[in-house]
Image (cartoon, rainbow, N blue to C red):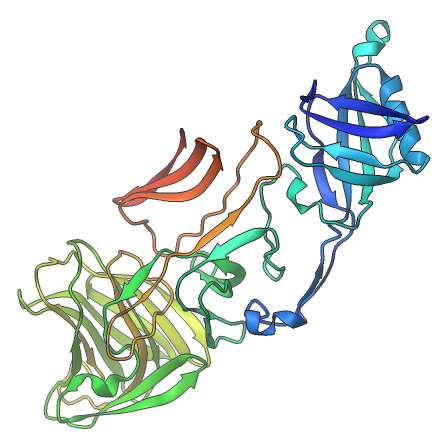
Length: 446
């Protein structure tokens, strides 16, 4: 059986089966009520039992558009008022249906009524419908494939990530989410200087620094001492690196794993003020004896002030508790060369001494830093994250809105998929085309 329209209602009136055919599915579908309760950081499935979310998905309001004899529409409303079940089919395939009870209806509105063509005018009415069986109607959405609000559960969507991953909590501490557990993170937006609660979905990446926070495992000058875990904020640990020799400028260093390609690379680390007035950070090409990143940090009221001689300082992220994350992009590297990270706890003048808190050191084979990947003796990776949801209706005219927040001024070169709408052998893909100083977007239909 195939419908005459694109959607339909089926109901029983006076003992006979009756159909109302619609030119378009219901639209502006919304939960009739929303009640949400959850605990802080409840996105971690270890405490998912304390999350209570009632989106009112079994009861919705929706607008119905009908073109034809208004008597047919009145018959539907009369049957609903009499308590008959109104079975809604959202598309012509009849593959799924939703049994509703009519709870309320607005007055019928005629669009540009023509008294001479009343039998073919277009009419709209707003319905409040409740599932007869108490089931969900989330898949209907309101012309939206999927809407996610941070703090709600991910019912109706699939999230995957084949590794653990870190994220910032509201208090500023660093937490670790297990594999396939989404991260409800407080994400820093450089444009506003504020944190926004959001679902964090990132590319895959590898931290090429073998020891990200246990800096006692780095190679250091005899004049430098390192105290690991001197400052701990959840999963984040900072070491206290001290230089007390006024006879020269000393450093600690560690070799990175090789880059896979030439170009600009991401460098980031967490710092907090110690007694040193000036701190140096470098990404050093040891083959060419050249700096790919050379930055100096001074302090004012506990806040770092960054000067860069080589590379780019993207921004400084205030983490909390006097801790800051510094985001950098190096000058172009040669993948064939060897590189290492160098930290100078008391930089510039050989007479300088003092200490600084440093941890979460990360170098990535990408132009923009991502969330911290903790390492303990070898490079470690975070798997790519995927967030998908099934569409509750067949192909039709639709609008896709995606809000992109840039965290570094540019996207990686090449195409980066943002949204893919897939239906059998057909798809519509929204991609960004990165490279150079910015990016563009394009829509691909296949």
